[in-house]
Length: 481
Image (cartoon, rainbow, N blue to C red):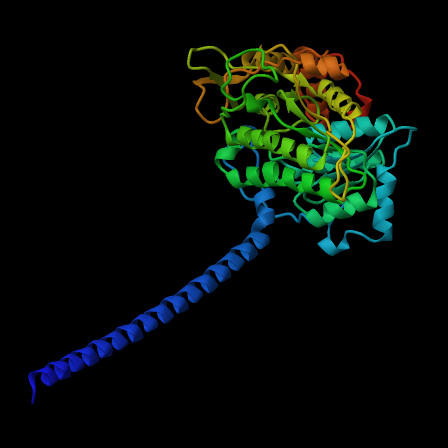
């Protein structure tokens, strides 16, 4: 056989072998691709199922994020104990599914409570209405003839019985307070459909600086997600859009050392997660103001105190401890200076809240998404402008209660507290006449008078029952009522 033929045959054999090998490789590659594709599909399906499972779990357990129950001792809530979970979907205290919101009778009751009783009166949705500031503001609004409807989830960060007592007081003045949550978008949509609220006073929030270290999710769920939920409902479902006044906090000043604290000062160094969530709210508000034309006013409260206050606040817990003969803990800064606070009496804060509502200016957006122009965007300090050492506050309580405190002084830990607060209220004074007028001595006397009546205390030899008691018609109520 000629050599050329042999070479050609050999090359043909080698080509066949290469082709066969390539075919095998192609089959293997195809199989690998099928395996990868199948694996990808399986991974995608597993991810979807895991996501759905997390959503279901979150939906089931979400109320517990906002309504974890805590048994408060006379001290701050450092060791919370679980209480039975309360429903967030109940109307006027009774358990009810979300579908029960609505209906002719329900809408009539909502409109009745929200309808002003004076010409030119406001119609205000007050969130956190069974809270300390919320209850006082609700009574003041009703007292001057404005319409208002309250909303509160009655969580157990502190004793819900105190919130229920405030609710009963509001009910005696014809104010409805719904037992529901600000993250319930369907409820908010129905409320805005049922009544043409002119304003929203948004005071619902998870309070407390130190507790944020134990339950951070509750702060994000209430102070950030809850605020967005309210903005969404007001921007997209209210017609007309209401003006919104909401509670920020002096905590946003964080580690600021310039004093007194001014709205122009930096707020980018929060000392606690609570402060960070309030700062987040102040960062979110301009977006809804710009995009949807919502009129938004933020109020930075400075250590509000007074009758019907929060049991986790220092003045309240100190009073309980002094009466019970239990020790109290006082903080000093690293340089040895006493902690100081700009204690602001509740009546002064209420005047500031109503002044902010009265001057809020209208929103300029609509349900269709069209804006008529820019809407007001404001932020104000509401404080007393005169910081007082916490030791001075304790001395006043000792005198009013007729009993010495068992004091323990320690260096302030790095748990979110700051050495001092001091408000500059120039802007609030200029824009709506805010001028705090209550001294710490007078304010604490009002608080102690209420404290003794509410808890039915019989303090012998002190100044509480023997001293002159100032009558406070708006908030007079015993614990049994």
